[in-house]
Image 1 (tube, rainbow, N blue to C red):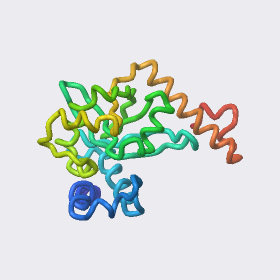
Image 2 (cartoon, rainbow, N blue to C red):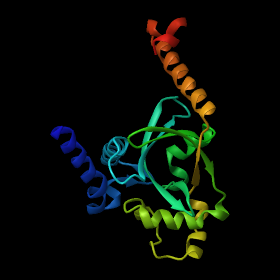
Image 3 (tube, rainbow, N blue to C red):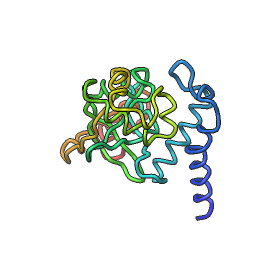
Image 4 (cartoon, rainbow, N blue to C red):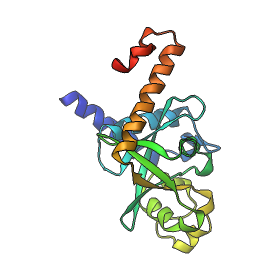
Length: 207
């Protein structure tokens, strides 16, 4: 039990401390993560998926719009007036934003448990309060903004069109089951492409 706890502790340090101690350019350049940035994101995503605190740091799982493969991204959930939102700190350049749009908003959030949700994009004119809530909460993500936690909502309105925001909506049970089936179909398709017999007609019973 001590080993997993030690691993979680190390991941927590990577998630919280390291990005704050080094220049942002070490982790991101021209809107894309560097090699070190990708390593930090993987560690942060694993830590969040394992259920490490706080609860509003989660791993976002999307399906690649070109490859069909799962893509993981650590994200911070911002809360405004009782509703939860995801904000793209890298703006329109975030790969997860394009994946979410291509998938019609169907994604998975993981924080100790798997939760299927729908992401509904917020119009630019309504984003400012959510952006402010995000900057107030995301100690690392706020470094990609020119504004500060105490900046006014009006100031956030001026940059709202640069940062996509999505409201988190619970997927109903029927849709969740359908999405699970789509995931199994994707796995079977990759097995068939690889010549693996587990992708055969009766793969539904084994995948």
